[in-house]
Length: 352
Image 1: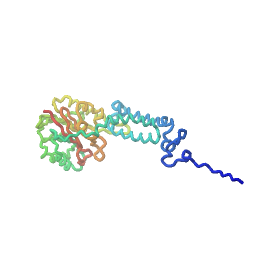
Image 2: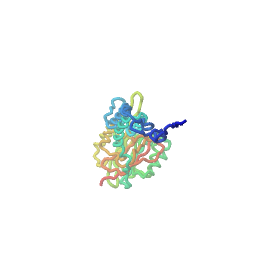
Image 3: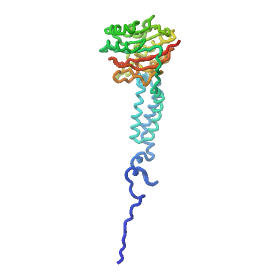
Image 4: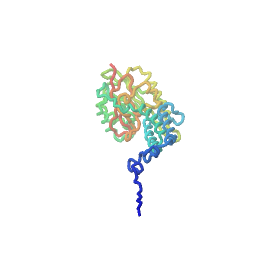
């Protein structure tokens, strides 16, 4: 009897299942992709994540129109501008959400806030400092009324190499420590209320500036430097508070900023340097009466954001050095002193 042998056809390469990395790619045009690429396949990738896309667009416009965010409700506009650089942290959060949602629409929308944030703050990562010595080195420091080491703070500031030092929040109970600690290195000084100016060069015409506080919180003095006479201001604007019921309360700070800005605008000196704790950043519209007529030393000649507060984990630069009629050369923060603020320093070139 003839035997008929049948055998099962062996699987061809086309029909055999793929394993490992190759399984993620389609075998032929009609086969659906599997694995990594299958998660992004189909028209759903454009329909998914619409809410995330809208949030990304809203964030982008919040960066673009930050000056238009209203202050009528809890001064939310100033609060947003104070911490505006940190708004960039929302971008990677939305990016992770978009990837988890597998939404191409949300990823495309994220380009808007990313580009705007880089346009606003990308330049701060460029080191603009110069190695030039500069004509004048200045330092400003909120020493903190509760500073447990005022003597050490004074010695540290005296060794900083600054020609002019401005101090804020000097309590009467500690003023002797600062006067004694700075007398040898900076023999010329004026202290009024809780603010003071110490200088290596002669001071004249020192007087308080009315910034609508009711007590001295700002001083203006003339400093006779080797390059000529300049006007130096030091100021400590009122603090702001973030409260649940009233929001970002900054009305008194804003009024003081307007008064200080007016005083500087009326100053007849060709060169003006402002040193102080302004309790606001350069982005805060409330400081426009000041920032619109002066240059930030950190913005013009610093590296990074130069955050100065709080000392342990700085999140904002509210201690400012600003100039009019001078050119910043370099700007930086100094080592901690025991205060809740970091001292900030700058070197400037004077005209002439």
